[in-house]
Length: 81
Image (tube, rainbow, N blue to C red; front, top):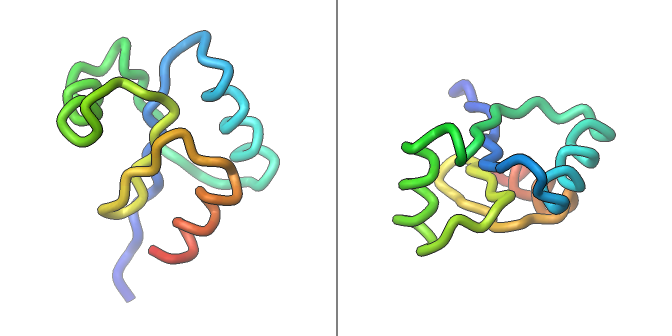
């Protein structure tokens, strides 16, 4: 079985939607990698190239990019990957 990489949460400080998602991630004990788009130019460029904006939170699960997902959508994407 191939090892799955962690979901990558693209976020920025002071984003209430980000903190809401992080709360759900913590509540469900989901392990993630985080990348602050204000400090990580590569993450910011990735968002702009994939969705044409810097909408956060966005989460990379495998090849899928979820834009402002609910915790239920994130869990479903993780299970489907």
